[in-house]
Image (cartoon, rainbow, N blue to C red):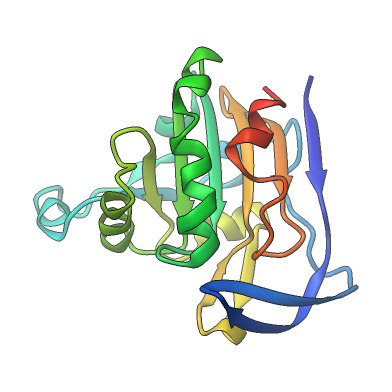
Length: 203
């Protein structure tokens, strides 16, 4: 059964603590995702493509090719999760491992691919994925200019943490391009509803 969790808040102060992004929240209504259960994610971002994680040499060889969203989502059962950035604390220590360590359970649920996307270039994402030893089980993509997240209303300004424009921390189940489940954390430093264990219960 399709479900959606959207916790809408904004954050007035930020600091880096213990390697993660910490945010102090104040209530306001500016954050509103443009995507929800039932949304066609391809139609919501019609001119957007993502950049598959790769080395610089692979980028040159491919003539810096990008991947259209329809090639990622159409005709497939996909679990996708977004995070503020490569090499950050919660992302490295909890978010990616929660999917990597449960990959067999996702496969048992007939998920065709598990995807990680972040507002980074594909070269940084690639090095990070290799460091985490997760590239063989998770498909990593860069959203180098943030256009994917902006199209979905999932962008987040983390300039106070010296990260600049990034994304919310989120996860979704997308079936044939349509969002069945969407989970968005209240704070980018939170790890309550976007992890692999949580979305497995929603599939």
